[in-house]
Length: 219
Image (cartoon, rainbow, N blue to C red; front, top):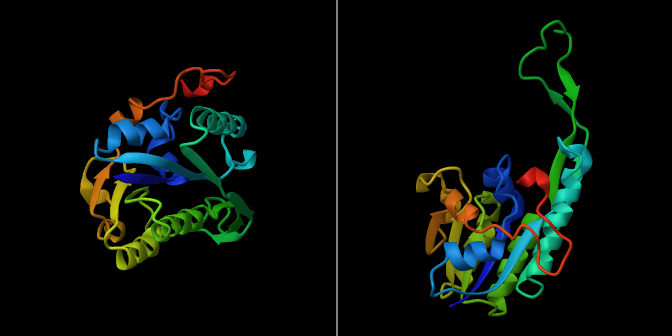
């Protein structure tokens, strides 16, 4: 069964990978060898992300680590993997406080940085539907638990009911009740993504035929 995998990179990162040593993740091996069955012929993995901004990170080196990681994926899978980058939008709105600040009760609002990922969800949804209309796959597998994708899944199910749709939710528990119901209702099958899967699908410490290594902070 010709299968294309669509990965919501930020949803995967913030749900399962952040604050772990599993960030050096081989997303192709993960789905091809550990998540999907032998009847799935993975023809392409599409990974949607956005370049990290130093000012949104606790560690400014996050920018370089992400760059190395994306280079490593491209080097390992120049043909099978497609990386689609959006962007991070930065605004500085004023927000109301939930509770007064001790010692400064006169302050009711503060100005904050607000970082929002742009284009990635729309790109994923667009590519999913384009793939359905162009017969790029017999099965699409979505790795996300973001309900913003629900309209795209509903459209695929409505207009292409013969295509198989799988949902792999990156949630912190194996309890399927944590899979978003708005997404699951459109899928032929759904499952959670196990940390064991992630641990068994790490890139080599050094990417062959390159000078790319797993960042020390990720070991």
